[in-house]
Length: 468
Ligand SMILES: CC(C)[C@H](C(=O)O)[C@@H](O)C(=O)O
Ligand code: SF4
Image 1 (cartoon, helix red, strand yellow):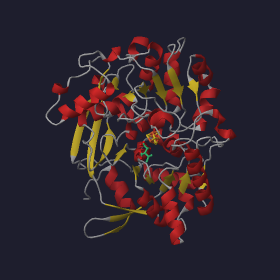
Image 2 (image 1 turned 90 degrees about the horizontal axis):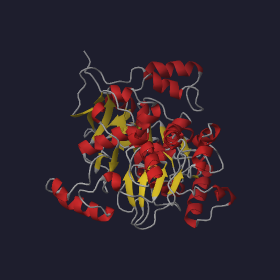
Image 3 (image 1 turned 120 degrees about the horizontal axis):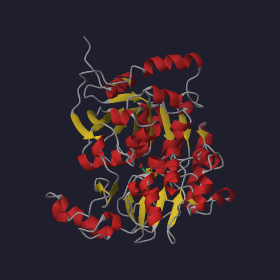
């Protein structure tokens, strides 16, 4: 009898090209996604060594982090830094024969939204990118994770990655979500429970009826934040929803190849009795709409709670909590729903897909962004933007008072012109809330798109269920 294997074990085993005695492996890489921030030195290294890209057809480039999102960007990029990085990516793609979705192409967008959208992302694959949120692609049952710039060069040159296997962790979410509770609340609640180090050294498989019930987009939201939970990657076993999503996309297998792929994809699940080194369970019915109050994604509480006091935390965390509260300008005992905001950011690879925008539109129906607030929507890709325009969502949201931007990472990180001013407080659908993440001295509260819409209406952190 063969030993039962986890989903991670199966994908790993299928990709080991060589294993050394100490367990260090050369892992074959099926897809390599490249963006403008972590690739320039890698391409430069190849150039200096006179080496080509080993498998340009398995590599795709897209500028996202530094692209301006105002619609005038097509008339020329004003920001010098952005322009240099985008031009470098363009040149590298051309010199090394890699396909690029440039800023005048509707397929451009955040790399983790574009990969699945174009069918580059498929079950059972190994997928890497010089970007920590590569875990997003794990929603398809692919082993996907971030790599460093020197590894980007290694993958470009060899189509392999040197790795040691991580441990297996299972996060099981059983039961049904209450109305107003979303995939974002699941993923934040998991981190609230395990902490940002809970997944360290592990690959997480998310399982259970609540995960099965999610759409592919919801599953991407969950896997996206595996990294905030400390894990190397997050995975969800593929099912009919996954196959349905992939089918017919530009880079999906076609004809007989589709049938062959499907046969293999259907074997991608953890066998009964497979060993997990760590198991965490959550009851979906107990998950509430949550927000973060501090400067770590684990600083998460139901919106109905109050701001905690440093003394509420154990030993080592007291000082961190004090510092968080000080930075965030919050007082213990204050109701979370009394916290006033100045900015709303809807977008990012966590929540910049069409279903996220539909959720926002539903809450905004017949309502307006509060006067004086800056509220922006940044679709995760040009195609998401087009789809929202086709559905009439874009027009409605603009009428409600939102800025309607071009695709990119935007205010998820303070790297492009979309930034918070010092002291500004933002209701954000992104995934990171550390100091200065959205701009120098900016303050970030993470939440779901529906919760961010509710905050846009009232001007303070708000329980979305009151507006449903
Ligand atoms: C700039 C990039 C390397 C970075 C990452 O790896 O995650 C960014 O995407 C982020 O979200 O902080
Ligand atoms: S949207 Fe944010 S988290 Fe995602 S890749 Fe861009 S900067 Fe990183």
